[in-house]
Image (cartoon, rainbow, N blue to C red; front, side):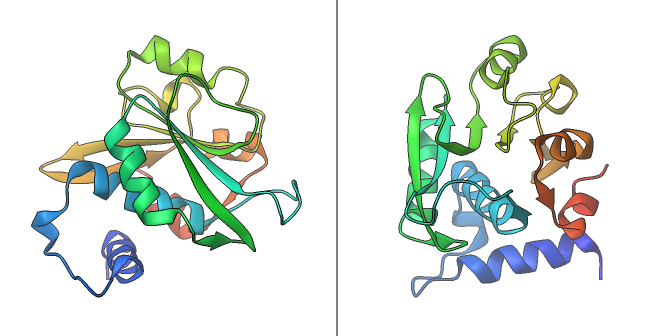
Length: 172
């Protein structure tokens, strides 16, 4: 079975709720939120804040993805920490463990992640050239399907550890 099919299967299984929706009913924002949630599940962060501190996911520039993330992750836990989403920020806060940036030029997005390259913050965007500019994961649509690339060197430099399965899926 192809690795992308395995990931998609895991993605679908993790999102099943009592109200099952057909795949074609998902919006691009909901799909991106589901992928971000799975990136989180397959990533390890170095020891940091105490368990009582929330696991913060920050969103800059895409209110629809922020709202979709709130629906997918808020109230869930990762490593014993409650997950919360801070949508529609103008810049990342020190509490961010994940940062999704969209809706700007590559220069604007690069400025948003400046200073985070050596920090344990998972950076994700849908802006072309993001991974070449130091970001970790970039969404792209290819023949109507959401795909992603991962810049493994950026992940390693940050101190994060991504599952090898996720890294393989993120290779072109």
